[in-house]
Length: 605
Image 1 (cartoon, rainbow, N blue to C red):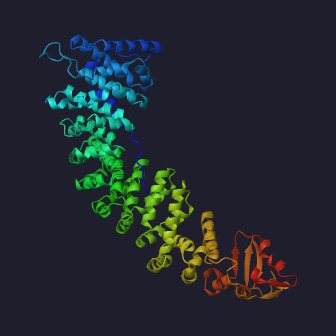
Image 2 (tube, rainbow, N blue to C red; image 1 turned 135 degrees about the horizontal axis):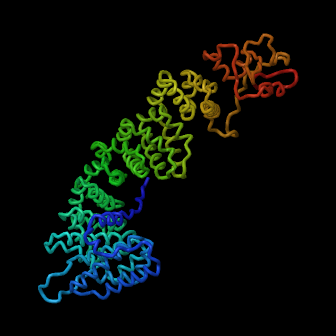
Image 3 (cartoon, rainbow, N blue to C red; image 1 turned 180 degrees about the vertical axis):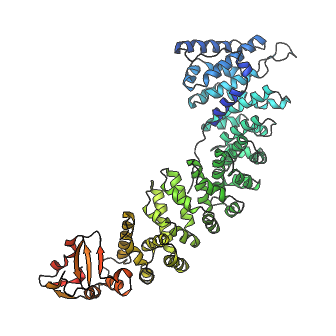
């Protein structure tokens, strides 16, 4: 099963908003607060005022720089509300903000820059928020933002380590992330503008927040873009990304595993390079991360490493991936369970892994997930069980835990899942012979009653016709099934009836035209006066609470089934009375109408 990676969520915006709450509080108090009760017309006037201010303050003077900073901050605060983003764009904010991504020339050579990088940071921040709406991404690019944003990424080369420099780099990287989100054309433009090399360099920046922003941008640029993936690898990003996987900072290893996941996706050659660079063990370590998102990404990556063209399935298991993956199956997070089942399904394509997954307790959680109403989760679980059923050592465990019955009775949502389950049942059927059958018969004789019932029910549906006599007569399987008919549980009565019906109809592959005529059935005829007559009767059936009198010798001579029951020494047939449930009295006596008025053929009963 191929697993298509889901589109990335806009975590970058959430991250920017969280950071903005923590940073620049001192500056924020100097800027007018936007009242939430402003009317639409008031907002138009306010936005127009600040856009005009941006267009008129493109100079090096301190007053202009201060005014531009106030304007970018005002627009950023408004842009956090997505309902107002369109209004901001309609007022011409995009070209005005793009102009302030570049530093104006100094009035005199050697003059110090007032509010260095602050205006540029505010402009990049505001543009990144506007780019959250896909319809504005191309407008921002067409206004010329990309070359300026890429240039801002290179500010660290000046050797300055100020908070302002780090801030503008981070906001530029975040803006690139939002511009490129699910936009293939812009991803390519960013590569053409030279944005990838500086982002790779920033992975080694001393500031963790800058590292995180750079990794977030690379993650987006690598998603479904082969040229970008290749350039990221060629820029030697892998060693640093793998080191970031080991970071104790959750946000760092989350972004790093995301970049590697996007690089590896549908790229076998890059996957090999990632493994050679030493990513396997750090990724396995993230399966136990405290961050659910890191766990999801790591599980997905394990599944990609274990793809059909990979030879490292066994190495993944040997390095400890199975226990945390199984633990994830019991999480309350649906996506985490889905990714874990996906990874286990890929790992279960190896014979030894199949046994190891079951021995580590993976079978029961996977069976439970068949009840999920989530299509991918249900399918991934079914696919993993299909792999586990390929190993003879797992067949008995699958059956004794009720797996066969769950596969037969489950409600599966999509046709591929139904097909997968049908193939799993076929695989189980093909393996019930030799040592597997002997082990099941051992369970049938000596296990707890509940397990004996599960084994008998499964064998009724899955065993070969030639083995029916051996299983159900010689090893008392039929007694277990018949006993279910007397259960107080309606479900068990249903299961027993279905299993008996399956046994009765299984085993003749020939069509009715090609089949040889049946051999004559021994028949015993009694006079009509002895039908349902207590005279010389030696067995009584209770039907609807009423007695129906019969004769053992007639039943034995007229029916192979009754002969097996009487001769086999079944406990239930040692008494002279037997209760038949779910049958009407009239049906029991129908035979006497089938064979004429004067004679009764007991075989009809």
